[in-house]
Length: 111
Image (cartoon, rainbow, N blue to C red; front, top):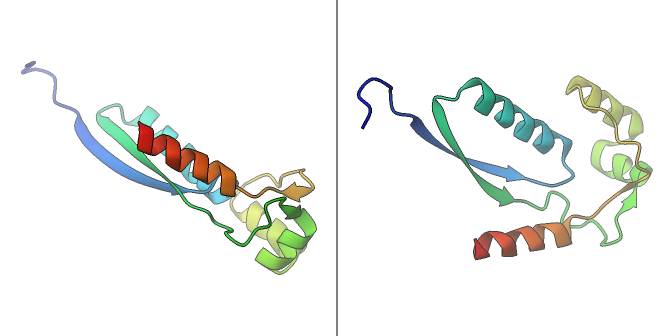
């Protein structure tokens, strides 16, 4: 045991996220920044996939329909994304992440 260097503080953080959620992406990005700024913390993320849109059709839906349903329209969606300093995706469709969440949950059980 090294008596000179302080021990790292272990910090377990549960990260609940959806693959296509821009706010989840932002949170994971900020967690990465924290890890870089605080090497004194032994940060151990525990990944918890969450299906943000469980009623999303398996084939996804058009971005226009999604913005209308989720945010009340494209203009409100643009304002919300801009407030979070997030680029609006150029994709014309919003994907369903049902299969992705299932795969990750199975993978997490195996590990």
